[in-house]
Image (cartoon, rainbow, N blue to C red; front, side, top):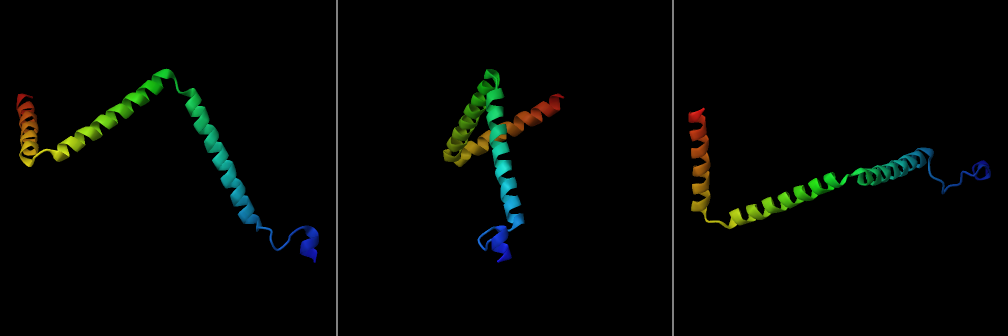
Length: 93
């Protein structure tokens, strides 16, 4: 009866659980605000850089897909070209 009188019913959550939920909620709200501020603070230059970076990533992925479908002898030939240019550059230096 004392618990019910004080408002601590059986259905109430323990204090630690309430504190943890409160912290999680505050952290989530803080994170959302930081993300919104970061979006607002992006200059047009930064936005353009981000677009360019995404475009380059997409091109690299497409290039990797094309290389995966290439016959084995073409891959070996390209690797040989790379190694020959690297060794040629090292000899010149």
